[in-house]
Length: 110
Image 1 (cartoon, rainbow, N blue to C red):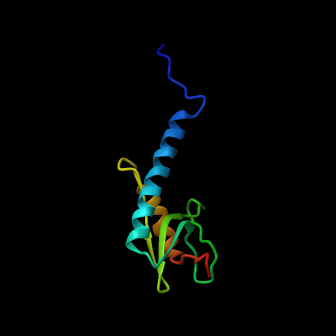
Image 2 (cartoon, one colour):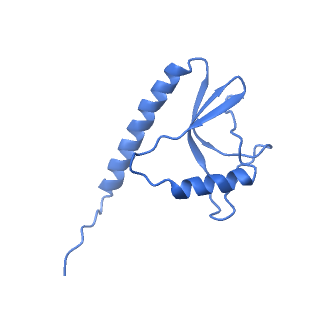
């Protein structure tokens, strides 16, 4: 019987997390240069018009957007993802949340 490798310390996860954090920091630095007058916020939940966080009715999960640029009362959202990541489930969840009214972002500064 072949022995399967076990990652007891979670090192593979740590490497992925470190790489993801590096991508986010690089992206956010570029966004701040491109939008110097905007408010840049990270990890923002999709919300309804009253500000309530909206869950996907199927998975019962909420959706956080990686980076949001808020300028002149309008929000533009960005995802920073691994080039090899399959985003199919995330996109499906986001579509379901949009259908439930989750198309708003709370501006933490106001």
